[in-house]
Amino acid sequence: MIRRRLNRSLSIGAKTLISHVTLCVVLIALVSALGYALSSQYVRETRMEELLRKADHIAESAGAAPDGPMMPRRQTLRMYENLTESKVFYLDADSETIRMSRYSTDVDAAASEEFQWVEVLDSIDRQFAWRVLAGERVSAIQRFEFAQDEILFAGVPVTGSEGEVRGGVILAQPVSSLRGLSRMIRFILTIVISVSLPLAVVLAMELTHVLVRPIQRITRAAQRMENGVYAERITRLPRDEIGELGHALNSMSGRLMDVIRNLRKERDKLELVISGIGEGLIAVDIQWNIVHANAAFLQLAELDSADTMLREGAYNGRYEPLRALVERCMTTGCAQSLEWENASHRAIHVDASALTDETGVILGTVCLLRDVSEEQRLEQLRKDYVANISHELRTPLTGIRGMVEPLIDGCMESEEERLESYRIILKQTIRLEKLVGEMLDMSRLQDGRIKLELEQMELPGILEAAARSMRSIAEEAGVALSVETDGTRLSCLGNEDRIMQVLVILIDNALSFTPRGGSVVVSARDAADRVAVSVKDTGCGIEPKDLPYIWERFYKADKSRMRTTGTGLGLAIAKLVTQLMNGEIFVESEPGQGATFTFTLQKAR
Image 1 (cartoon, helix red, strand yellow):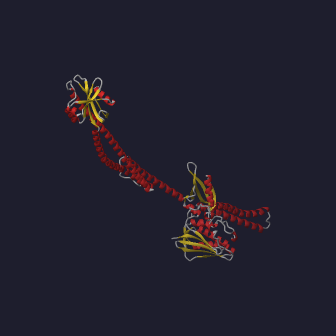
Image 2 (cartoon, one colour):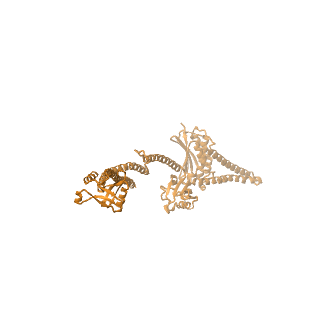
Image 3 (cartoon, rainbow, N blue to C red):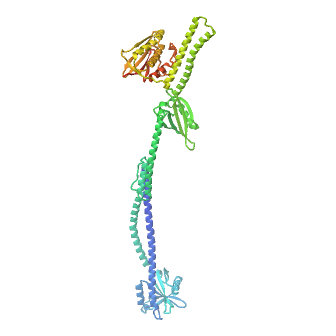
């Protein structure tokens, strides 16, 4: 392309040179032709005027003679001819004819020096003669019969002493004398053309070079700008219209650089925004080429590259729903949406919108992908929360109502039956109170309304107190409950009541999943800048699928492996309380091998 443009610029220079040379040649030719014509005309007119003056002198001599014959002697005539370099003729007019003198060629006549008169018979000759005899000075170049050739002539009348026309004098020169002058003029013009034409070519080349060189520099600069070199500048510009064009191109280049710099900044900002949003974004043109796909889209679609994603049958048709969505959007021009499941079985909500120009023509489609798995899970959790609350509240209330109604109806006749009913009512009331208390604790912990004052304390005593409070439940369940420490003070920063609360929740949870004959061990150890407290049981363990959800409210693992039914809030409360004391809590478990719940506290300095 560049070579073609350089050839184009060279052809422009050659055309300009040819036009300049042609103009110079035409001008030189016109000037030469005009000069030749004017010179020839000037020579002819000058010669005619000169002949007329000479004829006037001869006519004056003839008119000054006496009334006798006006014809001079032969020697005088030859003198006239030698002086004027012309043939000299005399006209004589009588009443009937016009005659023109000519010296006789006869020897005897020549000796007598007499004239021989010739009758003027040709119409042109007679017209010429009449004009002279009429007193008119006449000059012309034409053919005359009396001269038998094309001649340059001048005729003047001969007047007498009283002004009458006695005759006329004619001077004639052959045209060959003018042809010699014409040849000389042509020779001079040929020399002038031979010298001026090379000079004109040289000047035309220099002028072409002066005109084309700035244009070539401007062209090369424009080509470099086209190739992306926007900082190109044109120097050494002439002070004319071409220079103004170069300065305008320099100014345009500077402004173009500013515009491109601003566009790049806006593009970088847009790409930063698009890359930073959590939703996946993909743009597809009308030829099904993927114009843009951000990192979030690749993550949601679980792809390394999106180039071949929308090809028909790609990836075993995994993305066929997306392809069908894009096709519907491009066909109808209306917004489309669907719920799609990726390879990891995450729910992805896809919204597709058509891209159109100002005339309404569809240019492509933009798809926005959003992971709604967590939203769906939270919505399901909300529904489960309401259902669990309803169920947990209904169970103790049903038990209380079931005991109160027989008491009111008097169905409990013996004191033992009434006491048993009271015990059941008390147990369900305690259960209901525990549920309400845990819900209140959960709400306060989540809202941040509970503020703890951390104090320095020693863990062994707190571990023993928590084990004593749960030992009766352990004995009833047939599970051995013990405390193990390394014998050190294990000083930490925390809140005694809240540490007790976490320990009771973890011990109660361990007792619920440990079969009769098993054991639960409460231990504490030094862990670098932390103190770790663990509750280990020998129960059924936790399935891997349940591990991510055990810290959620009201989540319950397989109830078939539980000895008692809890509210499902204990572990969630334990996690919030631990975090409130700047600690962490985690679990290690394998199905059938039991579970170990561990929480850490800051070590006292």
